[in-house]
Length: 364
Image (cartoon, rainbow, N blue to C red):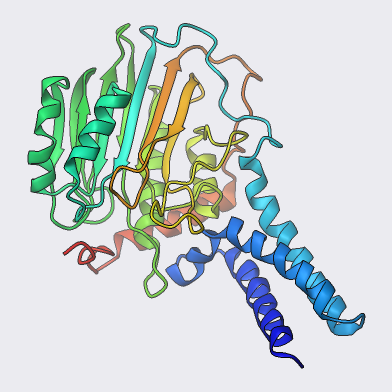
């Protein structure tokens, strides 16, 4: 067998294995990471399918490879097709004044702690001029560098850390009773605040940045934080927004369960991938930076902004708090008994963790 044929055979086996593993519900990074590159695996499977048709004569092996590749393409494609125009938009478009008093614009930016291109972060913020700006992975040097923003943002929640989990929240809208909370792990904070729109109506803002999944470690810290936030939102009577680097792709089983528990909407559905990480490598990108919103919000605008020095692209969102009408949006399915049982197990596992957060030494 020619070397090229062996390469095709090995790659096809890896594509099939990666596809199967990506659908296994095990809270470990060695499994969870395979749900990230679905688009890349799908594209590779298409390329391999063409190669198989040319490299192998008709026969049993050819048929097996074709079945494996077509099955992988269908499985991966089914998981990501919802983020294409082939799917109905989950978030309704706002039809009113895009700058009205019921609107709020948000910048969400993981700056990468070791990144010292402070000028680009400041310029990006000033260019898009959001009402609210969330910066993640902020240490004390980032706090000092972003200090000029206080001139236009009187409400600030600053919680710098040197472990790549620091956060700073700037807002020109009033923040009521903002809190920094450690929802699951002692060294990973979240910010929760009530925000008053220009028209006086309040909504709840949850700013989160859980652990990333890595092959050698469990993913319970991240999964449990998403479950805890979903349950807080589920019980919250106010309209809610959840923003941040969730370290999970929009199509993963964990994120879909988060939506079923919280009943929050994803504006990406029906619109596009908006891949934000890794900003440095065009062919290895996936959507990690998210905004999920209550059905009472409608989308005014959403954009992935230009490269600003980090390994993440900044994301810009603008929404309006309107009124929900039945049938206006396609709601996520409701959580069933299996979802709630799995959520309980994940939350219990997360609270029992006795290790340092993943990635605390990456930026040193």
